[in-house]
Amino acid sequence: MNKIGKAETVEALKAAIAAQRGTVVAEYRGLKVLEITALRKKLRAIDAEIRVVKNTLILRAAEGTPFEGLSKYFTGPTAVAFAHGDPVAMAKVMKEFATASPKVTLRAGFVEGRVLSAKDVEALASVPSREVLLSRLVGGLASPITRLVQAFSGPPRKLVYVLESIRKQKPAEAVAG
Image 1: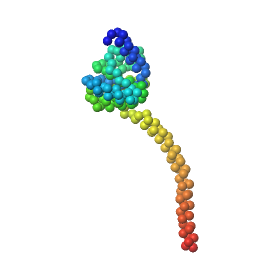
Image 2: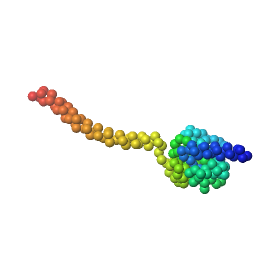
Image 3: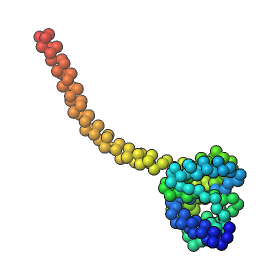
């Protein structure tokens, strides 16, 4: 690669670093084109991408940014996944892929300016999706209101049952009397 090509790659990596909402750094060894294509397709579906990078170029692109904290993980064959959407969804896809393929090893992650270890990335991947968390929150907020409505409707309901049983008894008493 000539100097111009390297400079363009560094600029593209700088743009990807600036636009990312989360990153996973992985080591890959012996991945076939079909395997990396399948991973790219899964990531694209959740608004993420993966790039196989030269370590020297990603190090140059990360200089002077918080992303520079990942420098020690840029050794050997390196692939970097960038999330433009939900970083948790990207971490899940990367973890699933690494679990299914012994050729991929998660090294580290980067979310909200913080460097994550491989274990932290796996923990992030186990977090429920945003939709699940929101539905749990709504359910939690609605639960006390539902219980309050049930508590207030209990006495009138019991009164109706008592009146109904009295009504049923009255015609029987009138016929007997």
